[in-house]
Every structure is written in structure tokens, then in C-alpha cells.
Length: 156
Ligand code: FES
Image (cartoon, rainbow, N blue to C red; front, top):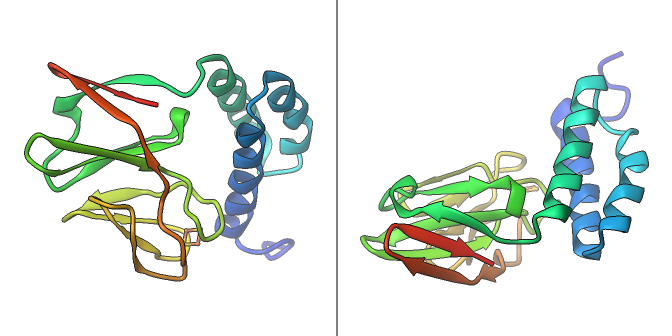
């Protein structure tokens, strides 16, 4: 019964991958149209949350103000609403990459010791460059633009 369509993690990845496709379309209409497709993913409560996330991301464009103090040196933080992972490889140097794993579309999950790790299948990426350090992903995380102003970081 639990192996209906893969493990819960695999189903989540499939949903995230589809969600990414909607965002790539870049249109609110596409995101709203995608809500119906998302209803095929996950269980009841998660469907509503996913649909809200898509609508909110479409409405807020692809930027978000972030406080530098949120980003530890050698670590980072994932901002799922803008599909970005922001890192601080060395003190005062901030980088941002797409948080969508290039393997199968999961959100990367953590940044430790300057390594970004995807929880789905264990791919690892360099927190300074986005380069693959360990597969199964074979393509780097695409870089995003970072602007630092005082304690504020804006990622676009
Ligand atoms: Fe497979 Fe990230 S989706 S390692």
C-alpha cells in the first residue's frame, strides 16, 4: 500500500520538479493553472500548502530581502520561496544559487562546511561556486545575482 508510486521522498521530488516547471514558465497564469496539476501530488494538507507557495512565489517575483546575519560563514540558508540558497563561503563574501537540485528537481536541504547537500539522493555542490562535488547530479547549481547593502542581501 505504501509503495503505490515510489517512496514518499520520490513522490515529493516529482512534485517539486513539476512546481519548478511552473515557476520557470514565469507567468502567474501558468502557476495558477499548475495548481490543478499539483493536486495530484502528496496528501491533502500538503497540496494546499504547495498551491499557496506557487501563487505566492508568482506574486512576489524572484527577489527577497535577506539579512546577512541569517547566513553563517561556511554555511548558508535555503529560501524556498525564491528558490535560492544563499551561502557565505568566507566572512563577508555572499553567493546565491538556484536551490533546485540539477539532478531531479528537489530543493537542496542544507549547507555545512561550504557544501550544499540535496536530501533526495545525496548530491553535493560547492557553496562558493555551485559546482558538483558529488553526484548523482552532473550539472552545477546555476548562480543567482547577490546584492549586499549593510546587513541586507537581495537575491534576484
Ligand atoms: Fe537527486 Fe537532488 S534531486 S540528488
